[in-house]
Image 1 (cartoon, helix red, strand yellow):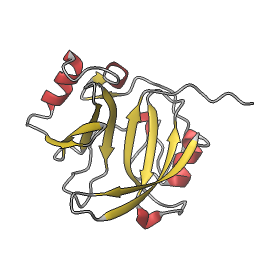
Image 2 (cartoon, helix red, strand yellow; image 1 turned 45 degrees about the vertical axis):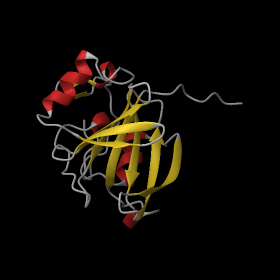
Image 3 (cartoon, rainbow, N blue to C red; image 1 turned 90 degrees about the vertical axis):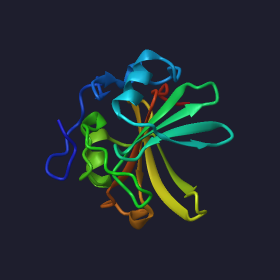
Image 4 (cartoon, helix red, strand yellow; image 1 turned 135 degrees about the horizontal axis):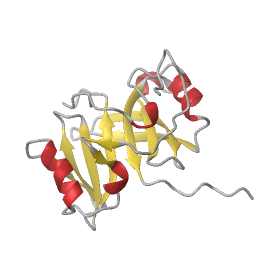
Amino acid sequence: MTISAQEPTRPTGADYAIRGIPVKGLLNRHQTNTQVYKLMGGFGYKPHGVNYPDCYYYDFPEDGVSLRFDKRHMLTHIILLRGNEYGFRQYTGELPHGLTWQANRRHVQAGLGKPTDSRVKPVRDSLRRARIYYGVAYESLNPAVFIYYSERGLGSRSARIDYIELSLPKKPLERQ
């Protein structure tokens, strides 16, 4: 099932894989883990590294993928990009939970339901240019999905997906 402009549907499976490697076997694994190493090697060339105080990224711009590791060298997020002006090409593999790059906010919500959270995320690039992303979270899915829409569509229900972050699912919030 896919979530797109043509056919909004509710996803059914959690067996999402990148390059044939199940994501649930990658997240929260050490950088030297066999599966993580296999994933990085599958991209075929050395990634670009970006370091921050609490984490670091391995970017694979030709493949539209970025991997986020914490300071313990554990893979915490897999980021799939639609392609952007910073040199990333569009990720061409299958997207999780039936998502497609053609889906807009309205299609995503029709297929995945109401998000567990929403946020505005300011980002500065290496040239200190600011961008603002509007994002929604589906934290109880496996893998958890954070979908970000670019500032061009900030607040618009027709805004298209700019990038998708995958992480371990969080426990659903209990109602008080």
